[in-house]
Amino acid sequence: MKKVTRIEEVSDLEDFGTDLVKFYIFFEKDDGNEVSIPLIIYMWDILRYLKDSEPDAAAYIDKVSMSIRSYGRKDGKILEILHKEEFLIYSFVKEYFNNISSEKINKHIEWSETKVSPSYIEDFREFERQMQPNLAESNARLFLFAEAVDEVVQKEIKRFYPEFFDSINPESYTKYDEILMEKVQELVSELDNFFFKESQQ
Image 1 (cartoon, one colour):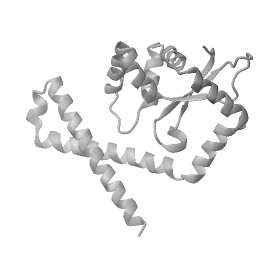
Image 2 (cartoon, rainbow, N blue to C red):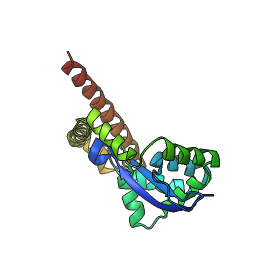
Image 3 (cartoon, rainbow, N blue to C red):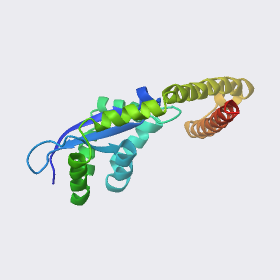
Image 4 (cartoon, rainbow, N blue to C red):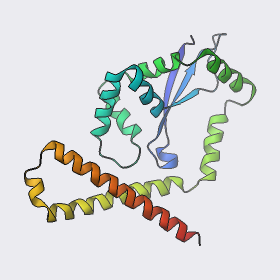
């Protein structure tokens, strides 16, 4: 079993406009030195793993996630709350790492030492930025648009159906909010695709 030396959280929010978090896992090789290129694990990998191996932890994270009303991914927001509440997410990241096969770990070491340079990750992220220079702006606009539509629709719903909100119970409100967010997301995505296609003509 390889010893994890450090874990870094890397978010795509600033570069690509989406709250997607990856864990960079650095660990010791057999010679005692740290790998030059970390193994990269996505937040969703950890969540899938926990649903099978640690259902109580998975349920807690789901509860945190559901408490955050947000369009698009929200990995960073979830982690911010988990860290604040001293939930030991890194212990589960290490547990996930320890369950990766030795074959896969050794292949990563071989690949990182013989195929690429230590600057590979940053070079690749820069390549992604150049290939999709407007992605962050586009994603940010999409999420802001969704929130703006949501705000307007909610205002009008409450104007036309005030009696619903006068006597609403938590379960009914949750159902209502799920429908609202799903339909707003569908509308925003469809319009965004439409505007993109029209702009290409």
